[in-house]
Length: 71
Length: 268
Image (cartoon, rainbow over all chains, first blue to last red; front, top):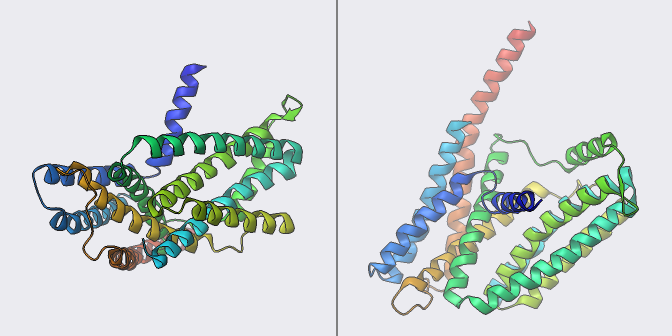
């Protein structure tokens, strides 16, 4: 019973956050990880923020092309 | 945040809530008509109570435990993932690579499943109708709650965000009660695409600000141009979405033509 609830709870959040395409979440998390490493490394916010946005857009475009090529 | 930004936030909340309310309404209508209104409305009521508890717990935890930059990073990231999923579906639908979301078709499927399900009574209620209504309202409701909390906290306008969602609920429920059928006239695909653009824009903006959490000061970063950056980000996402749609539409057309040729050949 408890295991079923835990599985259902996990599945709910997976569907809610990850959704139909896990690659989008993976791309966002990867770009964030690199951006966080850059901040820790001392890159200035004014330089980093536009680069972060550009990387998110680029990541999304790549994911979309992979998606369409797969289908 | 400026007043124009607040209006954009409220519109995003309103239209996102309209989309979710329409989807929940379709499920409740299908259950009400086929399995009885008592069970469908009991399931809806139970989901509303569960949502209220979830909202109180999530809202309390978020506001008490997270500093502003962590809040921006967390909800900006979630909003970004969430918004990009909506944008992806919109791009695929408008380029002809994915079927359009059709409330009438969903209503028919739900109605057929409800008609085929065996009757099972628990606590004096039709259990199938209760559970499906509960799940439908709770799942769509969590998305509304998530968007309201995210936008309300970031814009420091929680009552306005709640009011926008409540107004959307009122509009959809009134229209549904009058029509007594799925609201197919609402341009859901267009709304979803537009809301996807807005969610992705605010997600990019807040996640970027929240990166300041890892700077020595721990303070949020500021975008060049501050709130005006939102317009630039929105324009970039809109252009990217349009370009992808055009690129994929070119791919979709030859694929469709090939499929038609095969079916004509087979038919002959």
